[in-house]
Length: 311
Image 1 (tube, rainbow, N blue to C red):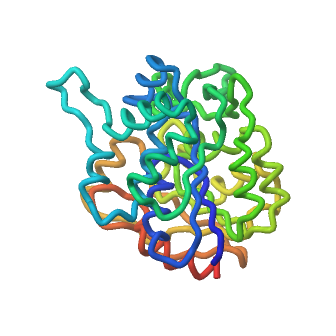
Image 2: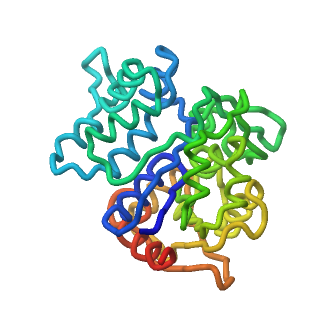
């Protein structure tokens, strides 16, 4: 059975895992530990735990439990009328499990057993660290949330990101990369979901030395404050800036342009459709667009193409 590693965070990892779960692959998610917003941020601050939000999403994506209520339980978010407002039940459970087991990795394993996950979820690092971004004007922005939802002028481009303190890769993540047959990066926010994994010490070196085929999924839409005005080639170049040249073996790009009222809503948020300007032989351009209120990858469409690349 082919070993497939998905690296990222947020909804991107969820999308890929959800789609590939029904294929005969041994799945592993290596997840960013940079999240510091919302429920995750509050729990990090109060209990000193590692961020649970992206881990929770990956666990739910891989859940193979015939009890749908368990996935719904992990996803349940308390309303404004309670003292737990904004908190996700899954985040609270992972925080409690870390305190009970004394170890975040053990907490994830226990939660995985409860959800009967099909695969493995690994935090990219076990170091408690924070994400920073240096803007093109020299200003430094502190915290993943402040990069993700800019309080600064979001039209100013990001020069680079870094972690403070420096974070060492989780040995389990390095081992998964070494043994992988295929490694998938993206889709996902470039500076807050994907690159935070690549700036962890040891990850890029492992990716350069793996025998695995490395696949990068270009985003469907730009992200204000991160990838303003990016074309498909800009996304690839940004990955190569951190990975190095000739490391990515294959790139998928969406070609289906969205239309209608949904586009106007995105335009108000300064978000644009990513145009494909890539033409190399390793580029797979296809319709990956999901129908609905959000312009994202369709898990089934993406998984169908990824499975062919992997095989």
